[in-house]
Amino acid sequence: MSIGHGLKGWMRIAGWTVLGPLFCVLVALSYNIMTFAPLPTEIRVRAALAAVVVPLGLATPFFLYFSLKLRELASANRQLSLLAATDGLTNCLNRTAFTALVEARLETLVPQGDHVHGALLIIDADNFKQINDRFGHHNGDIALTLIARAIRSSVRAGDNVGRLGGEEFGVFLPIVDRYGAEIVAERLRRAVEKLAFMADGHHHQLSVSVGGVVFDRRTGFEDLFKMADEQLYAAKDEGRNTVRLIGCATSGAGFAILDA
Image (cartoon, rainbow, N blue to C red; front, top):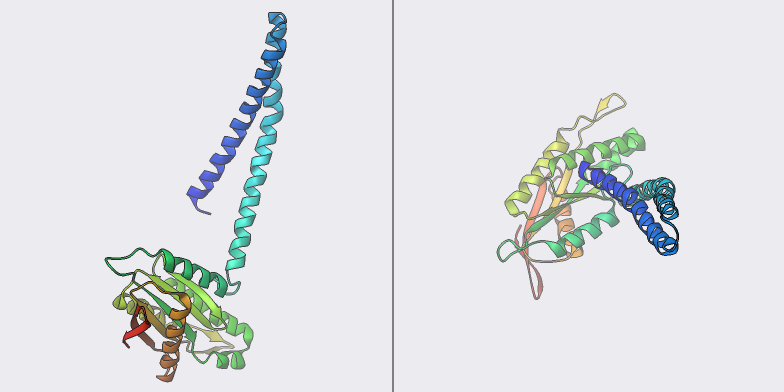
């Protein structure tokens, strides 16, 4: 939880704890003033004191407890939402959350001039079945964790990383051109290549293939995924441990590949 979010939560608790009892006091005083107006001054004063002391004594701990419980509930809901959106092994977004987030971001991208720029990368661990077969699934999970960490450390602030399934990951790069997308893709490819993965006393070279599509018009996730996935297969066919990107634009007739 960020410092600003935590401070805001405590300020909300303080507000409920102060304003809630004050409201109760105002209600009690108003009632007493109307009820005891015909009575002598001494009785009215005692009634007024009771209207202040009793609500403060009872309402303050109640509103404090109530506010703390609401904060705990909000925190638990945030944790549940995070768990529902996160892949437990790699701490990346799961496929459903990643897809939904990218779709939402595609809708809200702010045009740069006349264009909306961005890119989608699909990353797949090379020869990963061999790792599971040779070293076991436990070591395979360790390798996936290392790869995911290398990918997350290679992207920019504001980029999104998701695990799409198995050993496949997705990276969404908002507000980026072809050159910028290539820089990120190559950086994460090299980061994985440099990983030191040891299993059963043996070093195993890890690598990934990257396919991607760079767009300059508003579009949807499924279209981008299809084109990026095609480039991933091309990267695999070229020998793996490589990056293959295309640029594309959209028109009324659909997608047009600009270059490969």
